[in-house]
Every structure is written in structure tokens, then in C-alpha cells.
Length: 309
Figure (cartoon, rainbow, N blue to C red):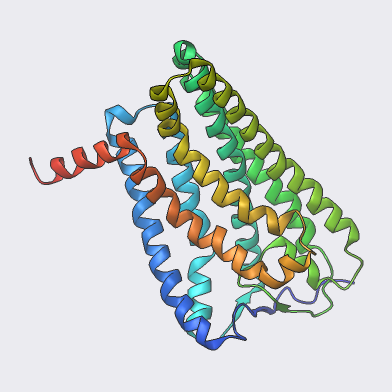
């Protein structure tokens, strides 16, 4: 049962059964990728050079933007290549690298979004102690935990997936190498792998989501007690952007990882994956820029500085 595909190419079927759609997707994905690179780079840049953005929120936002850039870069160039040309292949090494990198970054983002929710909780519910609670040491530790959790999950899930015997099965009915689609290539019983994937999804998807909902529950209770419309607006301004990002990311990724064998995941899985791998990283900087006065102010100061005003 030794894998014979180590020197073979995988075939990423993707959207090849819909040639007309492939041409349209190529344009949409290319534009989205460029916007992702530009938007997230701008956020990293202004968070690094603007003194008013030297806060825990923007420290974590910088990490999120970096994750989004790397996450899309691990997937989109190969996707564009396959959408444009007749070749739909990826080497075994390339597939393994894509699997490890995308899984690391996707898992890191799950934890990072929960950390950012805790930061918003501290800002709204513990404003007098915020600076003491979210000190630089804790921020670095939380960011480190996010990255280590992502790396650990990728090493475990990725290695188990790649060690599954495939008996020459090379047709991957997806547009990139992802765990739920790759375990379907195995020529052995994969029930244990599906259970392991479900447990990992509970820990890295539902647990952070529960922490996020708990944080925002406390935020809502704190704002209700104040009974001030100004407090509501301030809380919405503080938390609204993060809530939108959480909804977009978790709403799409849970459909794939919590129930990978559901009929909905089978029918719409590629399009759902396209949303959280391509569209969400594009929308994140737009959401934080359009809804956040501090970011818009920092952008204005950056452009004024660049123009010499």
C-alpha cells in the first residue's frame, strides 16, 4: 500500500467541466487577487508607520493581513494557471506544499479572529484596564499561539492526509489541494480520517467561534447596561468590521470542514472554497478601510505625506 504518486502530477479538475465559467472566473480571481495584495499591503504599511495605529487591534490586524496575503498566494497563482491553460496539473511536491501552507494559514486565521474578538472585549468591557490587559507581551504571546496552533494543525492533518495510500488516484475534484478533497482519493477506509478532521474542525473552528460569540455577548450586555446611543455607535464602530469579517470567513469555511460529506458541500464545495480563499481576503481590507475612521484617517495622512503636503 505504498504511495506510487510521489513522482506523479495531481490533476486539479476544478471548474474544467464549465469552460465558459473558467474564462469569467479567471478575470474575477485575478482582479480579486490584485486587490488582496494591494489592500492588505496598505493595511500592513499604515499600521507599521502611523503612530496612531500602534495599538493591539492594529497589531493583530497586521497579522491578519499578512495571513491573507500568504493564504491567497499559496492558492491563487496555481488556480489562475489552471483556469487559463489546458493543463490542470500540480506536482506532488507542489500539492504537498500547498496543503501544508494553506492549512497553516487557514488555521492561524481561525485562532487570530478569536484573539481579535478578545481584544475588542477588553476594549469595550474593560476600557480603564485595556492598556494593562492588552500589554505588548500578551499581544505577542497571543499572536504566537495563533501561528503555532496553525503550524501544529497543518503538520498533523497534512501529514496524515499525505500518508494515505491512493493507489494511483490522481484526479482531485477541487481547484487546490485541501484536506477534505484529498482524503477522498484514498483507496482505504477513511472513516477514521473523517472523524479526525471533524474533531480538528471542532477545536479550530467551533471553539474559536464560541469564544468570539461569548466575547460579543459580553460586549452587547455592557453596551445595553449603558443605555446610550453614543455607546452603541462606538461599539458598532469598534466591533462592526471584525464581526463582518468573522461572518464571511466562518460562514463559508464551516460548511466545508464540519460536514465535508454533506450533499451541499459536494454540490457547492468548490464555490464555497472559492469564497473563503479568494473573496474573503479581498473583502477584509475593504471592510476595515470603509468602516473604520482611524484607518481612513491614517490613509489620508499617508497620501498627504506621499504628496508632500
